[in-house]
Image (cartoon, rainbow, N blue to C red; front, side, top):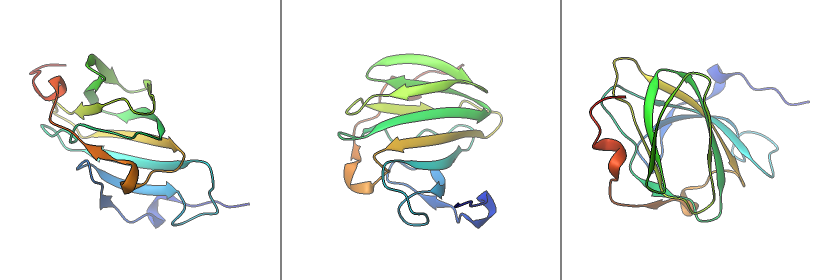
Length: 130
C-alpha cells in the first residue's frame, strides 16, 4: 500500500504557469500509468495555452470557478465539474476570480514537461465573466 498526504507535496510551477502539488507521480510514488496532482490558479490568472500530444488529462474542480478552453470550445466550469482533455487537444483555463481556482489533474501517462507544448493564448483569457 502507498499513501501520500498533500502536505508532503511541495508546490512547484509547471511549464504552463500553474502551481502544482504532485500527489502521485513517478517522482514520489511507484506510479507507472498515470499521475495525480492538485493545481491552483489565483484570481485573474490563466494557464499558458498548451497541449500534451501523448497524454489524456482529466480536470476535477474542487474550489472556485473557471473558464476552460479545449480545442477552441469554451465552457464555464465550477465545483464538481470533471473535464476530459483528449491527447493532443489544445487547452487553457482562466480564473476570473474572486477566489482561487483549485482542481485535481490526472494524466495518463504521467505528466511530463517533455510532453507539454506551449501555444499562443486562446479565447479562454479573452472572456471577462464566467
